[in-house]
Length: 538
Image 1 (cartoon, rainbow, N blue to C red):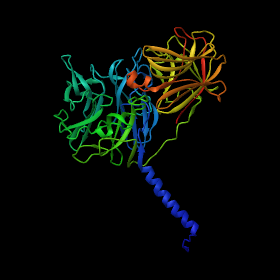
Image 2 (image 1 turned 180 degrees about the vertical axis):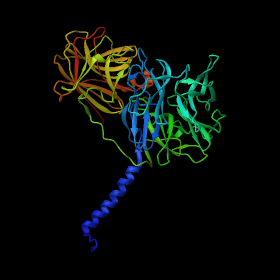
Image 3 (image 1 turned 45 degrees about the horizontal axis):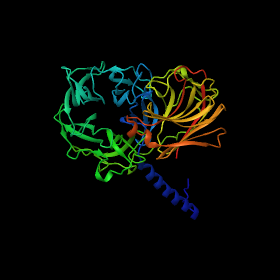
Image 4 (image 1 turned 30 degrees about the vertical axis):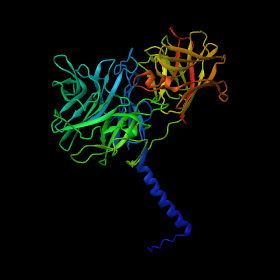
């Protein structure tokens, strides 16, 4: 068969040149650089593990249910939630849990075909772990660790196959509770500690040494922890030893990660710490960690988020984070080949039989008060006696505010016949700090609860059953408005974001945008119907 030479016209040649240039550009773009945070919003205390080419990450969830969100990635940059570890009340008792109680600092690990997630329910039982063969769930019932006290637990298997348990304190046989990072052997089948806890490192002198993770590399045991408290003084330090019980020698250039250097005091990233290291499938090392984004001065509202940075870790050397020990929003570094997921839709039309992974309840929900009407695509909320001012489980379904500037709108059908009944839309940091746009009998009310201060900003007469409720945010203000036709929105008021920030309200969570209903002391007779919910960052 005769092969003819390829002939290119000038237009064809230009096309090939353009194709070649675009190919280089797209390849470079897909493997160079990313933006932090990689998981925005209240997703703190990240822990990560790898199975072949897949990466799995978990976060703290505190008083929210289900507990411990599970994310999946193929590139460490793009993450998609695939489920929760704790989906049953028997796994996660949260009755009367205080704000920022509940689930602290989970660790996820994979060992001999099984996933382990170990964590602390600080208001309901202490340390425990659950297991699964599929990280999307279902996960097992808890195996409780027979140890009093201690948070931020982790599990570790050495190269000899022994199982170890670490936490930030240890209860000894004499009943004493001693600070520092403690290590014990553990019977992984029963949760029983089979050796006395040994304090293996106290850190470098920063307060609250916590978040221990242990790694084995080049004949050393590397122990990485967080110090300084999960605020502006947060940092990550590391030490190593030839022997698992030590003594451990501190890295000479600790902290290996922090944003408290002189040159980073005005950085849009602050409070970096509580980290976990992961080796990628092609050999590179990375670190995931929490940090927060200040707005409106020294305040933050979106919670502590999940960040990523590259790590250089030479043989027999110390890990170096991003070359400088600091990170930025725009990370200019080579990544794994990027494999993004589809963007989330702006609208949730409630067309499924259960809430999407974005939504959470406050504590263990009374499930009979939530109806997902698939046929009519409606979320129906039945108000109970509990209110959103109570450290309890009101009829509430919320999603994280994961952008500093956003617009969110919902369509509510609600015509209560009794004065005690209400339903609405809230920006909630906790039960003592929230901003509410509420429909009651004949009225629409904008009100604020700010600690001991309870203030009604505005009331308007609204007798129509259907009303559109809107919350918008900028770095400085939350703004509230309503509409009767979905087009003409009338402003009701605005309030400074600082008033419900973490620095004002305290705690470890971030703002939730919640739909709720309540009978204010007794069960409501009128259900509230939410037809859809829109959320879009600006």
